[in-house]
Amino acid sequence: MKNNRILLVDDEPDITLAFSMGLEDSGFTVDAFNDSLLALEAFKEENKSYTLALLDVNLQKMNGFELCNEMRKVNDKVKVCFVTAFDIQKEEEEDLKAVATLNEKPVIIRKPITIDDLVKRIRAKILDS
Image (cartoon, rainbow, N blue to C red; front, top):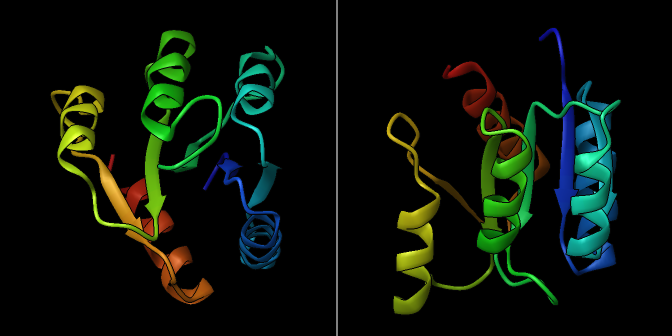
């Protein structure tokens, strides 16, 4: 992997800490945020290029789908995986369809998940291009 920087956004600090530690132990560089607006600002910084964004669906201020749409205005090539502990609701299905691109189907990762499984899913998403 030439670039293995991940933007991780989850409103639960325990999740961002556990995921960050596990991903970093697996060779990724992780920038973790518990605030979607701060994460978007970091994403917009010119000197940071992310291979993948790992976004919780249920975030405060801006949900994961809205955050994805804003990020794609900056860089439409970034790969995105959504994380949720809940079933996707009917109204969220429309948001999910809206973030899909012609050649990329959205990936939903269910919590709880082991770090090993998380790393496998992320590596598969990064390598599927």
